[in-house]
Length: 173
Image 1 (cartoon, rainbow, N blue to C red):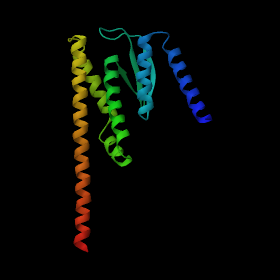
Image 2 (cartoon, one colour):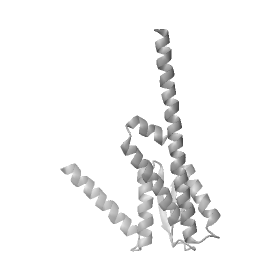
Image 3 (cartoon, one colour):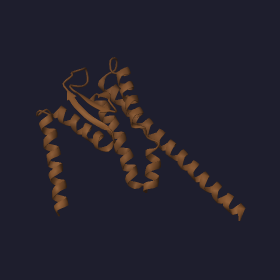
Image 4 (cartoon, rainbow, N blue to C red):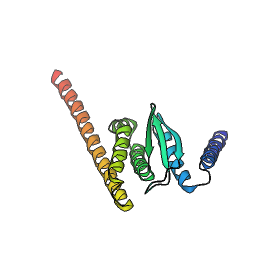
């Protein structure tokens, strides 16, 4: 029971800290929550801040870092990236630990994040907000398909290696 209370206290402190940092702004709160999810899920990623930088589509940007490299995410990019993380996390929950590790080996978070940022920067200035969302959603779908194909290919390689080892062992007997 003490462990449950301790976890609840930590969660409440975490939420209070995010609310304090958000300065009462809902957009800041949303960005800090997205950043917190990234920080908790991906080892080495750290939320630096949410900055009040108004552009056509965003009123603030999430600044995160990994290995001293800073990434600046619009709200749309942060949402798209977190949706990919949530998908991977959901798949891991359904797999055994070996398969989950195999799935994670197909997923390079930094390159996916760079891809989303690059896509956003290339289309943000001359597309509407809805078009930007559609393009990012399409990229999320492409990521999910690529991840599935990479996972299936690694699974097939692993299965073939196991079959080869069994055949070799059987031949030696």
